[in-house]
Length: 402
Image (cartoon, rainbow, N blue to C red):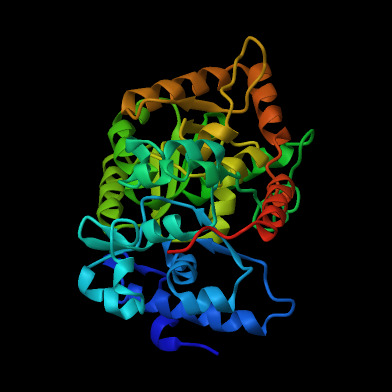
């Protein structure tokens, strides 16, 4: 069955102008539909794995509704927190639409500074919590990264762990990627130069740019991604002997910001606005370096993809970026990228300068690229961690209910 009224839309959660105004109704409907589906599944599930605020109502319903607790007495709930910046906050007058008892709208439930907060309710109701990297699991218990929920999360730290996301290397592998001008693999990277030439030609850079570093960026335009920091750094970056290519989609204010910067610096900066799956692959392969100056990053996938493609990441040391990128040391030959800690444009520029110095040293650059391509962030390890967690949850007592 489908519900086109709620889900036949151009975007998942909202347009570039903002969230859909009926998101609470949409996702409460979805959660109720999941609960109706469960008895039809054979064997009946032992663990219900939910993600973010959009499905946080599932553990909430099982926690606060006695009839559901009796209907599914052995069902454990696991809630994965992908991004604390999005919490499902709604005005209090919408609470009756959830079909919950009045006592659920209190400080130990969904109430959050006079509003409904679905993610908070899910955090308090689920049997166990995960995030998408180990560092992010620690960060969200601090004021800087907790978005007001740090105290709630700290109260559940014994039921919270981080499991790093993996990447599907069947889709993201330069040895077989059908979107590339040439394929390549560790030990035989000649095709990467062909990909770089193709990318520069696509963006109308002169042939002379084939010998200088190309910095790529594929991003969602949101405050989280460090767009303001990047914009502050760009006037300094374009003074270097490099090319900067950005593919981005998202908030209109950032589209205008990047568009203006591209017009101001046409010699070294190209910006393509909108989503283009094939071009994203081509930027990953054709760039020498990949920028991810995120304000925060629960996991991040582009830095992992870049490593596979021998495109060295430059990241801010936060969340999964810090867990996956090890700073390169030319003296020891260890490391797979570059990273900075303080959220300042000067620090981003400093790391780009370091990367340019290594790029100018062919033996060290070759070693760095080899280290990057040897990094393994496939789904094997996280899948085993999730399986162990599922097995543990399926055999434990459900949390005490109100």
